[in-house]
Length: 478
Image (cartoon, rainbow, N blue to C red; front, side, top):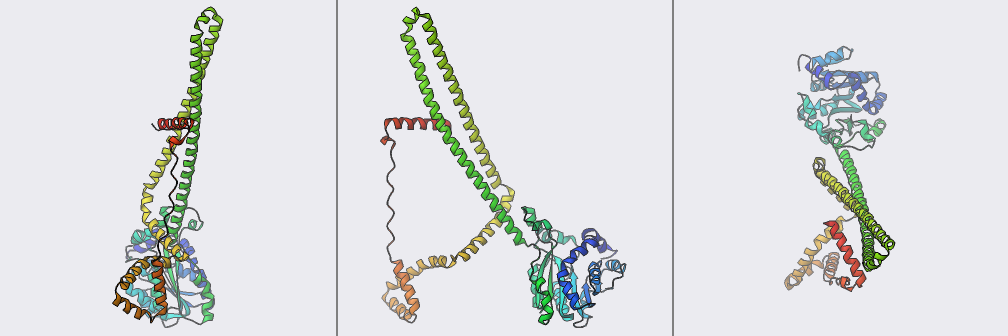
């Protein structure tokens, strides 16, 4: 890069010096014991950039030396009095004597060079490190889907992302005593156990990672580094995907439970409404009978009423009162029918909400993830419960029985098979047991259920009640 382009690019997109130095303290568990083992030792930083790492290591008592191919970046180092040189990483390593530096670091360098040069860099780093010395390589993490598909290519000098398992394997293959993947710079709130969304699965994985390798040394030299090499760092894509799937499963279970409770309430309300309708129907029938009886009595007493005006007025008043009572009961019946319609509308709204959820984009987008995770859970549970072996046995037994029965129907093949099996008594016994179990007759079918009671078997009163209930339910459905 020319005209200080890369320095301006990093100033805008990478962050301030203070931010970068605060992120680099994530390696304190590694460089702390190294500074205690080799105080004042030389450390070589490849692609040192603006020099934040050199500055931090100088504060820890090391003697840092950095190299870079961008003179604009080196100018930022020289402004702070840091020891740097304009040269490439491999040349600097090849010019370094064997076992002469405590640490070799390369922050966001390996994604800029061909893979063969990455292998050469790792081999040369192992050569120049002191016993127990560290190799630190940090690079963008393609497990973060947004990084791997988009932000990685914001830097025009990037070649291709390197997956964490590949870089870790190359370090181990080069002969380092041990190596560790550190996932870095993820959002702190993802560690708080709060609910996550689909965007967190896509963009929440640690955006950077590092592979830390340690050269071989006696046990007393390696012992202080055991804890940092055994710890876990950052968040992987599998972690977030499983959290999202578990969260989604809990939400779906809660939704199904709520729908079940709603269905129970609606069912109980419908049953109560049906019973209330039956009571109203019976009340209306009794009132109608009373009104009709009053009218009949009025007609019978009409000749007498002409002669007794006050008695006629009283009967008319009773008839009007009966009609008013009938109207009031009819009004209550209409209100109850309205409540039933409102309950049915609420149930339909809940049903539409469930259908909208199942048709949503997030539900369809996460379908492959749910399927893959479901298969993984079922396989894990099958292995844990010991169902793999019995499952294989169930699938192998029928064809094995068919083969054995075919051999038994051919005398010559049967003699040959028995001659071979006599040499393997254990196998002979197992196959005989399989054949004996396969020839056992199946258990008898269960006894049929007794026939249900017919409506014709009911008493006349029960038949009349059944018909009234049936007509009430049919009228409500229509």
